[in-house]
Image 1 (spheres, rainbow, N blue to C red):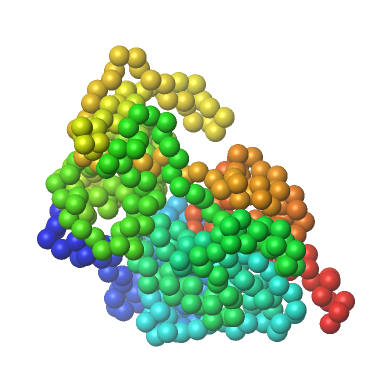
Image 2 (image 1 turned 90 degrees about the vertical axis):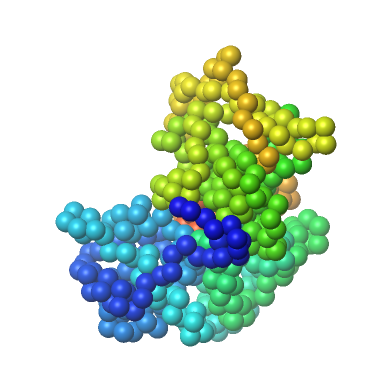
Amino acid sequence: MKINHTNIDLNFQEIHPGLSQNEALEEANRCLYCYDAPCIKACPTGIDIPSFIKKIASGNLKGSAKTIMTANPMGASCSRVCPTEELCEGACVLNHTAKPIMIGNLQRYATDWAIKNEVDFFEPGTQNGKRVAIVGGGPAGLSAARELARLGYKADIFEAEEKAGGLNTFGIVPFRLPMAISDWEIEQVEKLGVTIHTKTRIGKDLSADELVNSYDAVILAIGMAHVPDLGIEGENLKGVYDAIEFVRDTKTKPLSHQFFGKKAVVIGAGNTAIDAATSSVRLGAGNVKILYRRTSEEMTAYAFEYEFAKQDGVEFRFLTAPSRIIGDEQGRVIGIECIKMELGEPAEDGRRRPVPIQGSEFILEADMVIKANGQARFVGLIEQFNLHHDDGVVKVDSASYQTSNEKVFACGDVIFGKGQGEAMVVSAAQQGKESAHAVHRSLAPFFAETV
């Protein structure tokens, strides 16, 4: 894919324009509207996919979008970022005879119509007198708040950033998910009477004890933190970036020409690493490499993200690990020393451990290094609530999302890992919904007695 560097803003426009009306109608009419549709079972939020597609075919776009948004409060965002080929489209029965229905594109078509026409779908439930605090305003927290508001609760979100949305707002590149889409989903939640307290950090502006004591229940939906240190020499040099902050800057700051012609090296092979690499291309980097200590089979990035990066000209160096970052006399990055790896015995997670090959060191020229080697956990915040956790993964009852504190529930990335959940926006949205209903089940007996 050839990138035009003459206008950076254009480089960050959405890569796919969406379906036209004729294309959407043609695609919707291909659907078989299966009675026992496997696509529904493959969707973590259980969207009635045949129903919303049939409504598109009949011209009922409002009904289609409402079907989507009822099941998935992040339905507009998910239409763009879900790995549909692994979920709903992967389960489509037409895979056996033709190509699957473009479910994600049809979902986008319906939700884009709702956004353009400023449609509001939901109303708050009758107030039941109970208050719930949600810590974190990302996909899980917003989904939980919306469900609680519809059930009659006063839901307050406490968000550390200047605006809500979490990953959808700040962590996914704009050419894949424009901020305006996340903004609309946030507005849908706020219109139900949910109060979002931004720039509010628990432990600094408000204590965990204050929340637990002031509210009938608390839902912890804090996501994950910064990229951890690599633990190698040179991490503090000028030109070394945290991938999370790097992607965030593409959505929140005016873009400059400081990356034109630069040699960029991205460390890691998850979706954030792919986003950092493809953003570097759009910022004008002349050469972009991704280093990964395992092989393409072990990388955690979605298959479509991997293919997209290759089309953008990103070079992948597998079985390669950084050993130190090299700087010049001014403290600026000029290179990165790497070592070749080989796969040894499987680790606890089932993946084979990468083992360095002694004597295989080599140096790559680099002007910038972007660290995308996973994300740290908010362990300190978790411990403020005195919750049982495993290296920052909060332990919950799988049926109720209840933590070791009966008043505190948790959902989203804070419970992902150690065999719990899946790190996808759609999974976070579903867990948010389910945790809200779990809170309702735990509190309903108490307020039912007073009604």
